[in-house]
Image 1 (cartoon, rainbow, N blue to C red):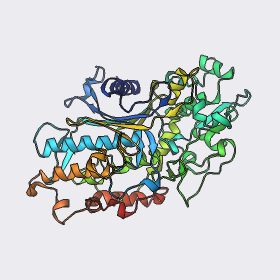
Image 2 (image 1 turned 120 degrees about the vertical axis):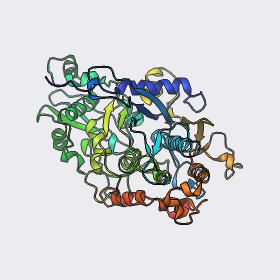
Image 3 (image 1 turned 135 degrees about the horizontal axis):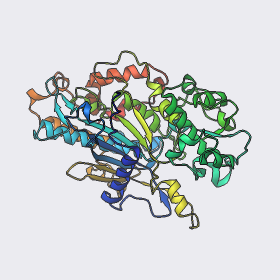
Length: 506
């Protein structure tokens, strides 16, 4: 008799619901969108704790799992290159995913303080080398985002029946963004019905369901069937034939009529988008920079940054001084939105395969990627639906919210990279710094280090005198070695790095 499959630790809808409830119930009104006028994006890190003594005979029982939001971020904005500061006191990138990750680093610093200084219960246990710690074996982290990450993961095929013409996306006036037209997305439970000609979903599509429904359904369904990344999807030229093959679609059944566009631009000086009509508009698999309003940004797309986390971990260079291994995400869950499983896999893991010479402890772990059927109530799409008859045009919320599971000042609300309400006169003073800015995270790191007796500190900070932010980052040798290995693989060689003089603060 075959053993039954182990019960899942969580579902995508459970993760989404937990994050939405945390946003609604735990975060104050400050920094949230103005009702019916503004929208925002949401991201979070969820800690999953499984029973430490779980054995193989629990497969047919309900597994007791504890799920807790440990960091959260909202935001849609980036500052331009001209507004960057060498003092490390401004947030360059305030997209929700990046705010959530920086908030997570703040949580990790607090947990290291509990373990190394206060000797209290923590997510960390002692490692095998002096001054180093490792994550408890019963813990893992799931990353949630209400929308697909900007950049490569958002270049999603739109499909339709060849014999059934559908209205294509209008490209002038207010309907310039295909994402704004995505108002008939189906729930994920319908995805497996798409290939059954007699199913309600298929009948609906024959009646002229817009192509965007299929972009989510078929692409996801094809991925679930195959479980592998087809070479075609990772190549740079996005053709109709490639997308058909990649998504497991029989020739002649459907055709790719267009792709959802991303606002992120290709890295300057590298291969650019073809910008041809329809599906050939974008090239896929490339590194991209977030768009700015007139002033170019130096911030890489969220797709690119998340791919990097999957190799280097979410902790960053500074925290690697204290860790035996990087802190990897075990899964990524995306809320209800235009979505393709193939595009997500290509962007987050497909581009990171076969990286040579990674140092001990680093790797490219398997990443579970799932989509929830639950829509974020303050997403652009949801707010559009609520305010269809309302006056005025929708705008992205200008504020970004950071929340960390820490005892002191868990909340941090910013606008234009500074704490909300900061005056020009205050800029440059300590009170005008976000708690997740580079300089404040560095200050927290230094405080942690100085609280540990010198003979208990990690070797990497004891063998040489370190002073600046840049020096401490460079001294995290295994992290820097892994980063160098990743940059030897295309497309990561063209990653835009801030000049060293932006990291010389103390």
